[in-house]
Amino acid sequence: MTKNIPHRLYLTEDQMPKQWYNLRADMKQQHDPMINPATGKPATEKDLYPVFCEELAKQELDNTTRYFDIPQEVQDIYKIYRPSPLCRAYNLEKALDTPAKIYYKFEGNNTSGSHKLNSAVAQAYYAKQQGLKGVTTETGAGQWGTALSEACSYFGLDLEVYMVKVSFTQKPFRKSIMETFGGNVFASPSDRTEAGRKILAEDPDNSGSLGCAISEAVERAVSSDGYRYVLGSVLNQVLLHQSIIGLEAEQAMAMLDEYPDIVIGCAGGGSNLGGLIAPFMRDKITGKKDPRIVAVEPASCPSFTRGVYKYDFCDTGKITPMAKMYTLGCTFKPSANHAGGLRYHGMSPILSKLYHDKYMEAVAVEQTKVFEAAVQFAKLETILPAPESAHAIRCAIDEAIKCRESGEEKTILFGLTGTGYFDMTAYAAYNEGKMSDHIPTDEELKPAIDEIPTIPGIQE
Image (tube, rainbow, N blue to C red; front, side, top):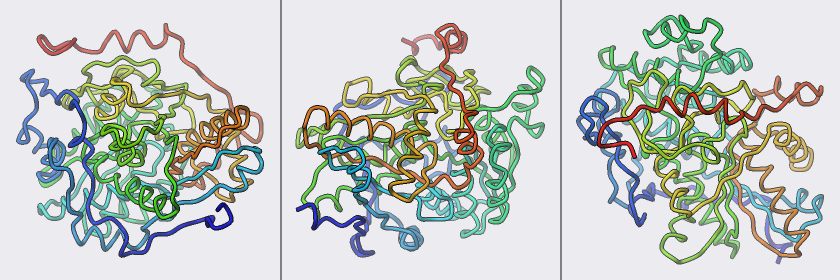
């Protein structure tokens, strides 16, 4: 059986999913609604129009439509780099001497180097359909900003990207590639917005955060005619678009007569994890199957494992709607670790609800252990993983070792969200023994958590 399973399995273009799957349609209980902080009431579709494209606002609030057709123009772009391969990590299995079978869904075969293009193409398409001039966004590690630059270039849209300052410094070539596709990139916090100027006035050396960058991007969008804001993670609409990852993985594994016992994904805001687990979580919720689903986050920004489940703002400047999620507080300033895409203070409302209801579990890992796993994987499987992806690799290795110790033959599936070729300063720091770990103390986490605002009649 093993000899008949290829190292990489590609679906054909005709087999690529033609619809996105909306996991909310199968959830037993919905996550609590977004709250408009100005009214203290659930945000309506029209409340979201000044920020999001109208079609995306509809997708954001739709809890009942199970499948959304993927527009043909979006499918045409997907076909340039999709379907992405399902891979069997034979060399890693051998090195670990494990009876476990390890599969990974590889999303790095496009210029952005990640899964982010799946939603970037969709969001840019809807912006173009609405007749907008352009969009604004934030980016942490730079993968989302790169993907959106590609998508906006294709559809002829202007783009402003607010990149977390520490990543802007660590990864200068991310800026270069975004500019190659026509994106305008600014280190955040910047002096271009009221939110950025306020943060810099309080802390001139602020290294930035995703929450801060979101504030700047949203402010620019709502104050500019013909522009809207787009987000690369967290939102329901993003998890919807990313479901194509899991749908392809489910189909490919079925072709191999396989089904995962454990599904693992890195977790920062939720886009990759939510997309990968979508059909498997559906099976778990409906009782068809019972896979273990594991979210892996950095110990330096432990939203799931040490955060609180409350309504909070999605940005540091407190100008976005409030969402019920696991959060460290919108003013939390994470340490400057190298997994820039996982430095968000909160988690997707969908995933937060599923985690709260015990459908999934979460672990937090230190970055030195993450890079140890990344280097081992690269040497054995020939792909240099992004630091974000390497969190999932770390957990997959740990689970495979448990199988070796117990003798259990489990099937493990993890998401390899992208490549690490723009993360060489991080790899250099690890290889030179200069990388360290920072795990915030309870005392360090407390101020931001205590500052989570309370709206009468809303906050638990």
